[in-house]
Amino acid sequence: MKKVLLTLLAVLTLSSLSAQTLWSEDFSNGIPSTWTMFTDNNTAHNSSQAAAWSASSSYGNPAPGVVSASWFDPAGVADRWLITDSFLVPDSGYVFSIEAACYEAAYPDGFMVKVSTTNRDSRDAFTATIINVPAATTDFTEYRGSLDAYVGQTIYIAVIQNSNDMNFLIADNFKVLQPTQNEIQLLSVNIPAYVPEGTNTEVNGIVKNIGAQPLTSFDVTYNVNGGADVAVYNVSGINVPYGSTYSFSHNVPFNESTSGQYTIQMTVSNPNDEDDPTPADNVASASTIVYNASAAVSRTSILEQFTGAACGWCPNGHDRIEQALAGTNTIWAVHHAGFGNDGLTCSANTAYTFFYNDGGSTYAPAMMVDRYHGDAEEPGPVTNVYSVNGIIDYVNTVNQIPCFLTLNVNGITYDAQSRALGGTVTGHFTSNIYNENTRLTLMIVEDSNIMAQTDYSTGSSVTLQNYMHMNAVRTTATDTWGAPISVDANGDFTYNVSYTLPSNLKAWRCRVIAIVSDRNANNANACAVMQAAQTSNLNSPFVGLDNAEEINLSVYPNPTTGIVAVEGEGIKNVEVMDMTGRTVMTTSNSVVDMTNLSNGLYMLRINTEKGAFTQKIVKK
Image 1 (cartoon, rainbow, N blue to C red):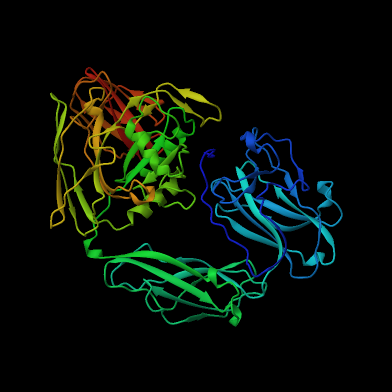
Image 2 (spheres, rainbow, N blue to C red):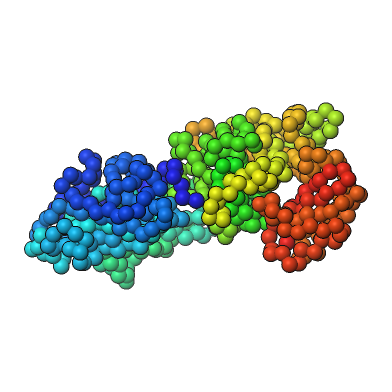
C-alpha cells in the first residue's frame, strides 16, 4: 500500500564545510519566486502535491525542503520540473549537489538533473543530463553532477521528477560547489547485533569518497567501550571514484569473553595520505550484545498485524502473512486498529498503535514481529506488510536473535460454567535479561469472526460480506501493557491467572496468547518481546461458529498434499474456503479431495447437526 500518512525517517548527508560553495538553496523561505516550474496534466492523489514542486517541512526532513509527486489518479508518468536561476560556472572542479530521498521503499521515486546553456523557457532547452537517479533510497543521499563541461558559461539547472506511478520525492540543499581534493566520510560501522562469547567477529565499515580525487587509500582504527584503539589498519590498493562508497573489514576482529553490551567506535583518516579537512564525519559507532550461547533457547516469535474492515488493501496483506507463516511456529495476532475502528476493535488494539511511534499517524496493512525495530524506514517497530518472501526474511531475522526465556501456558485452565480462566503461566530465564520493566501480557484472541471487509485486490472497491476474520485480539486478561512478574534467584516465575471471559466472546473460538516483553512508555523501540506462547482453543480444538455446540471431530492429515479425512458425528457436508471466505468446493463425502486446489492455506467449514465448525488446513 502507498502510505499517505506515515512520516519518513531520514538521515541527512551534509556537504563538506570545507568545499568552495558558489551558491546554495535550502528552501528555508520556500521555493525562490524567480525560479521556474513546469508541471504536467496528471492529478496527484494528495491534493497538497498538485504543483510540480512544493515546499514542505515534513516527511522527516528537519528543515524545509521540496517535494514532487508521481502517484496519480489515473496512473501516469511524472514530468515535473524545477529550474534554478542562471549562474556562471567560474572554473573547473565545480559540481551541482542535491540531497534527495524517496518517500517509500516499495515505490522508489527517481529523478534527473539537466542543464541548459541558452534559456529556461521550455523543456527543449535542456539538452544535457548530469545526474540520473532511477530509484532513490529512503535515506537522504547527496548526489552530484560535474559542471566541467560548462566552464565560463552561464547555465540553468533543472531538477525533474520523472517517475512512473511511484509516490513522491523529497529534495533539499541544492548547491553548486567545488569539492575538496581528498576527503572521506565514514557512513557506518557494521557488526552483528548479537555475538557469542569468545568468538572472532569482523568489524566492518562503509566509507564514501567525497573528495574530488579518486580514493586510493585510508587508515582505520576502532576502540571498544572507549578503551584503547586497536592497531591502525591501512586500506590501500583501491580506486573509489568521487561519490562512491567502499566496504571494508578491519584486520583485527572483535572478541569478548564476557556477556554484555559493547560499543565499537571506529575512526577513518588520512585519505590518500592527506589530512581530512572535516574529521567530524570520520567517526561512527555501533553496538553489539555478547551472550552465552549455551544459555540460549528456541524462540517463538509473534507477528502482530494492524488492519481494519475499511482497509481495502488488508485482505491481500492478510493473505501474504498467511502464506509466509504457513508451517511455522510464529504466533499471529491481529489488532483491528491503524485504519479506523470496526466491530472487532478493543481498547488494547488502539493502545498498541503506540508502536507506530510517529506522533499519531497510522496506516494498514501493517505489522511488527516481536516488537523489534528492524526497518530503518519506519520510526517504530510497525512496518509495511512485505511480500511473502519479505515477511519470511523478517521473521527469520527476528528468530535468529538469541532467546533466554522458556514460557509455558499449559497450566492455564478454563471452566465452561463460570467462564473463568485460571491456573498458571510459568517461565524460566536462562540468563539475567529481565528487569523491573519486564511484563507478562495475556491477550485473548478470537477466530472465525464473520464481518464485512472492503477489498481492493480486484482493482476496484468490493465489499466482502462474509469475510472470516481470524486471530483477532479482543481483550487482554492482564493490564493492556502487562503484569509485573516476580523472578526468583533461579530465574523462575509463576503468574496466577484470574480472569472471566467476557460474555460476548465464544470460548471455543478463543485462545490465550502470552508474551513477555519490556515496557518503556517513552520509547516504542525499547519494548521488544522476549518470548511468546499460546494455548489451544478453549474447550475444543475446533472453532465453532455462533450456532455451534461442542462436538468431537477429527481432520487429518494437516498439512495435506491433497486428500483430507473428516470424521465425527452428524456431519452434513464440508466446505473448503480460501482465506477471503470464498467457498471453492463443497462435498458431503468424509474424504475431501483438495488435489486440484493451489497450494496454500484454506479453511474447512464442517457443517454438522450441532452447528458449523471451522479449522485451518494447509495444502502443500
